[in-house]
Amino acid sequence: MVRVLTKDYIKKRTIEDMKALGVYRKEYRDLIDIYVDMQRDYMLARKDFEENGRQYETETAAGNPKKSAIVDSIEKLRKDIIAYSDRLGLSPKSLESITAEKQERSSLASVLSKLE
Image 1 (cartoon, one colour):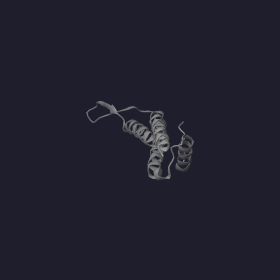
Image 2 (cartoon, helix red, strand yellow):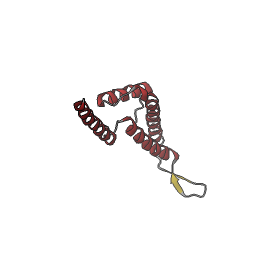
Image 3 (cartoon, rainbow, N blue to C red):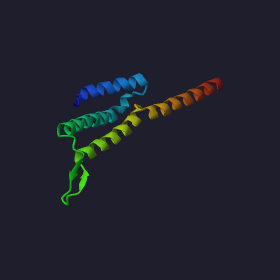
Image 4 (cartoon, rainbow, N blue to C red):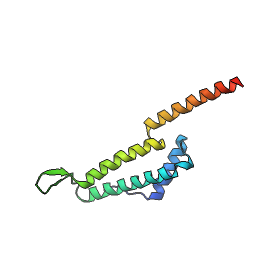
């Protein structure tokens, strides 16, 4: 059974995670809200998928099988969640680039401070 978390809990956890990673900024509020909505929609879609028999395919009017709408929605939400995770610095890939950027800036800052 898929557990569906509340938006408030997802948002709180997301902000805590971002703060722990050192990537949180209050200017990201709108992006965080979109990310939270997608996370919640994903959980609801998974719950619906589980409760309705995990049907991967449906038949078209012509009788041919095609991917069910709920599976398609789940796949799209996964891709969107990954994209937003990258933007918010919550994925390993994005965290590596953020860390590299900070190190470059630190190096530049130290060189510039020595010039003064």
